[in-house]
Image (tube, rainbow, N blue to C red; front, side, top):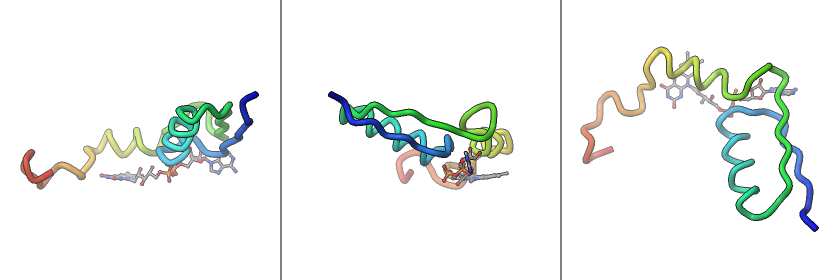
Length: 60
Ligand SMILES: Cc1cc2nc3c(=O)[nH]c(=O)nc-3n(C[C@H](O)[C@H](O)[C@H](O)COP(=O)(O)OP(=O)(O)OC[C@H]3O[C@@H](n4cnc5c(N)ncnc54)[C@H](O)[C@@H]3O)c2cc1C
């Protein structure tokens, strides 16, 4: 039987944790107080994530 895991918070951290645990055969349920997951990260993406702005492709 799969062990159950509950994760509170569906930002990038919670989503990654849920993904990795699901690969390990845990039964994961993800909750967020907002209507959809990853809202802050999507907001960040709208302004242009700066993680790749200043790096050439090879260096990144
Ligand atoms: C305008 C802006 C620009 C950004 N630009 C960049 C960038 O260029 N590059 C970069 O790497 N990062 C950027 N970031 C930061 C990036 O968005 C965060 O580092 C990332 O979202 C953090 O992920 P997290 O999962 O730790 O937290 P969060 O994304 O904050 O997720 C936490 C989640 O938990 C939920 N939650 C909190 N409390 C509760 C509760 N009690 N019950 C249920 N749910 C709850 C929240 O609703 C949220 O969905 C930017 C952020 C903003 C706002």
